[in-house]
Length: 121
Image 1 (cartoon, rainbow, N blue to C red):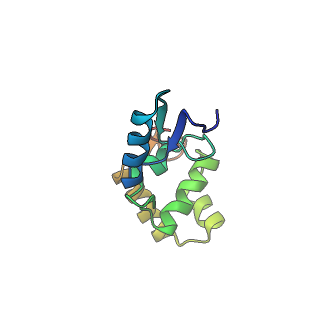
Image 2 (cartoon, one colour; image 1 turned 90 degrees about the horizontal axis):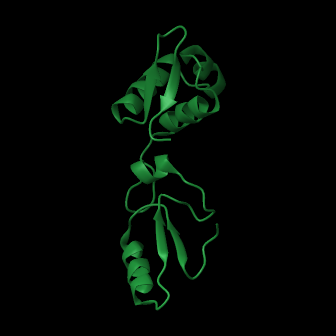
């Protein structure tokens, strides 16, 4: 589905959202506002949950790289993340801890044979 006069996508709630809502309310045909959908019509829960009012996702570069690697391979190990991202083991460990504290990811199962899960994806 694409945006049109009756369909509007908003990744996050910002001041611009108010204008879009008022515009839809004033329209005779009405419309639907989808929150958490980017302009291409794709759902982006991470951006929706962790974006500030300017649409900026509040993750450090190391956290973003680790998260991307987990998305690519949920069974990835810390050592593999270190090799692929070229980030120190300590920084990867800190990024994993922060992503878990922010409830973006969680670990399912044991360290050796478990996997990472991105929450709300």
